[in-house]
Length: 203
Image (tube, rainbow, N blue to C red; front, top):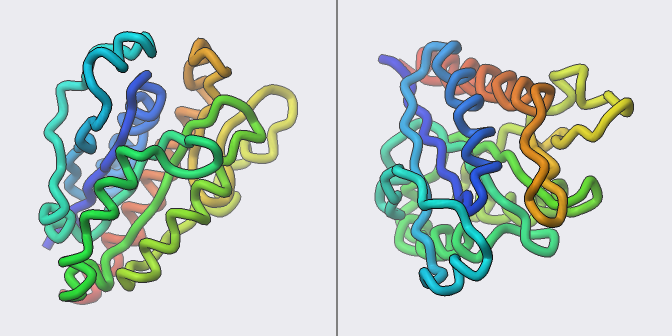
């Protein structure tokens, strides 16, 4: 039986979306089936326009119930003041019924991020997201330093032991670099191998 991984993102300015496409490539290279979703947008069109948001992504909007379907889920999370965006939190806060029935227990979870600056909270966003995984009994898979470019200090490089990442600049003008995209793909491949190994062993 082939393992399935869902990628669930929030991406107003498409930085996370660009990373997610590389995560998806890595997952598929590892042999797992994937689906890419976005969370429901909670901001009005007026507010999004004032923020100069990019056009909404042409992706299905995930429901809490759909989180029960895959063997693993990787969440692509834009950081807001050192924690996840309200839109991502709205999804996770809606999983109370799943928690009460243990529906997500034993599923694998991973994370990747975007922040405005290098000190903008990629690690704190991971740490404040892990509490959801712990309460659900999910198995969190950090990336570690599996990619040598996480040691690169010659240029700005997003990412951490908790997952791939990109640094966007305060106005969102910086796009994910080739190095950051490569780290994201690497994370997807590693996550996929772990989930696949578990699913094959279980079956």
